[in-house]
Length: 137
Image (tube, rainbow, N blue to C red; front, side, top):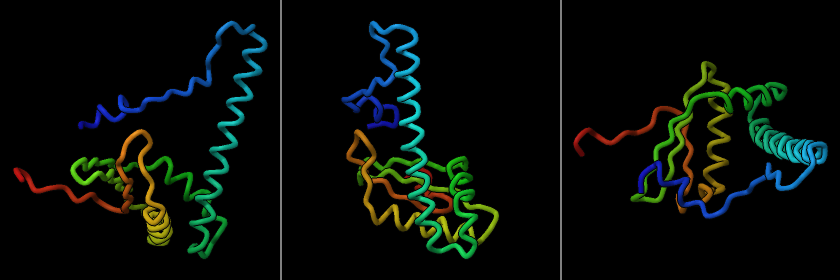
């Protein structure tokens, strides 16, 4: 299984923007309601993650901005299909206290044992550079 094949394995599609036979005004209202629902779900997820990070931060007001920065930061995604693991390696931040908070979040996420949707790959999160196999082996 290659990385490009992951999306093809998903056997369901949720078409939230289906416009079959709707009038323009009704369509816009329906679309706006669906977008608002997605925004609410995203905000609640962000809040839940923020609560986990606040457990270890001395300045709890910084937690939400840290999470927003984390969502925008880079990460390496490395599938290990032999062991059925999807490694997500988050890059370090410039501040040690933020790294400690992210490390706490990473531990929390790994304890939850999430599966990547549509696959049997278990997601494993880490902070720092990924461990790459030696060349030729």
